[in-house]
Image (tube, rainbow, N blue to C red; front, side, top):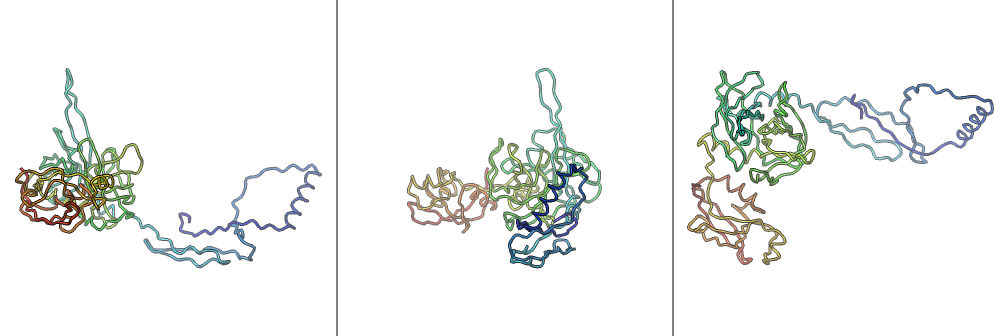
Length: 397
């Protein structure tokens, strides 16, 4: 299919007329005998030729000219001769309108920090991205973008630049909220439900890639995987989206949006040793953190009072568990919520409020969606017997 939208069918074959072949040989021999030398010329574009793939008489099938609307699916006519027809082609719509919707809420962040040398101090410049949260000027970004800096500047797509102050940050999720004082109400981003995102869904990343001048950079890709645990120098990040939409230095803190223009992730990390592997915090994981940072200046994360490890097939085989995944309790805080509720070291947690917890990452992601004072139901195995415990969470000191 060419860029003009025309369909092009091409059928290859090998049937050749014996008479045509004989005539071609005779003409070639005559040319040699007469001492004729062929002079090459610039070939002219030849019309499309349909070669027959079978011995059956197959007529030339001329492709129709299709003018589908954006996003429309079109079904061409079946080809003759029993060859399989192309059933449908879906044209990916332009994302220009989506970009127009998202761009006003994308901030470019520049930061300044100081490195102390033996004799002199050095000023370092850095860049990142942010997402406008409120008309009043709240902006979310990554904690690593603004950590240990002495100055933050927020550049908006309307050309205006503002100094920013830090409202709060969370090293566990690598999220932070900063605040500017705009002279007019801002257009906040629209956050979507990341719980419905599927592997293979189209996504668009927007951000201050490489701090290039001229506005945010837009890239497109798909959700490559869900629920990734990403190990960074600042700690593990849980329940991350993996995407092949290009995420570069400077994209950190920018939005990953669906085709409705809703933020379903916050670009956070990339694998520099590979191409097309970037990671984003899901919106469902980010929103409670953002709300807590705005309200309290820190994350009011609940405390359950236990530590645990992932159950792997090898561990399950060693300890004769009859499950291949889950969270095995390795330590309990004496007098803590889990201890009071009756959990014990060696218990294998399989569900939290009826939702499977195949690993520690999923367990913590679910746990952090609750608040101090909430009571949750834990399902666990103890010596391969099913048990339940109601745990009332407390505020983390």
